[in-house]
Image 1 (cartoon, rainbow, N blue to C red):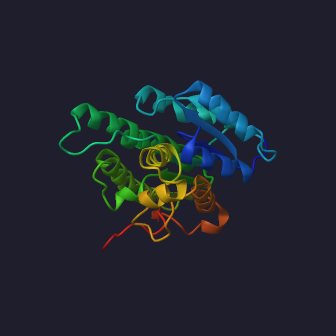
Image 2 (cartoon, helix red, strand yellow; image 1 turned 90 degrees about the horizontal axis):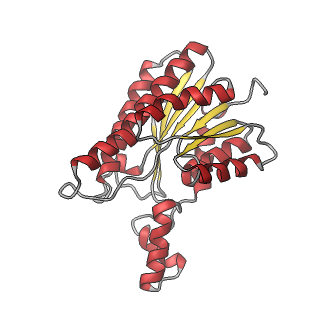
Image 3 (cartoon, rainbow, N blue to C red; image 1 turned 135 degrees about the horizontal axis):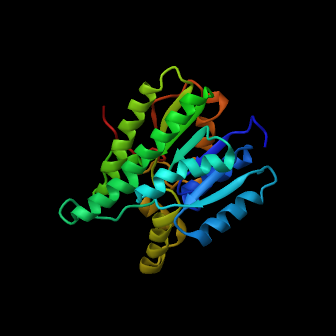
Length: 263
């Protein structure tokens, strides 16, 4: 294994945005570990990563980010596979839709563990290991454009991911001078997961063609489209690369201009 290759852990990396990030980093020469709750889906994703001629190391670990025991062991197991981890990408799955009136305590508890505490536990392990190693490192949290602008039905995601953005800022300060940078990417609507399903539903239920369905979803977006997962992969690859060494402690929104944050 080449000692100069980046060693990367990408959580929830078997599909969607997580997979796109892992794929782009392997294309850039990184050795990668991804995790997923589903062994079959994980195996297929690892196989796809390994099919790239530039990929020398790609591994999968079954882990449920809502389970503390899985999260506590994940970073250690990834380190055993790659020798060390110098780049952590904290990504996670979707939370249930709901409003303040409809969400239960169980919904809030699950969201807290899945989104916020998994980010705390993983970044705590990574920060300690990276700082002790003396090597430069990167921690990137994948959140949502909702960290700045709440969306009614995404309350759980908005609240927990906003907490992650604050965590990232504190962590960047705490790691000052260590060579470890901490940043956040906050994507808007991308053609993955639930957004893809919503597109298909609009096409079936309302007879819209694909482009019309996409415009319906992105109706507040001046780009008049949703993002492609590969575009987020490109952004993360830039953030953890050599050309972005001055980028630290910040949140980058990538939503086609749909946000309307007023400061």
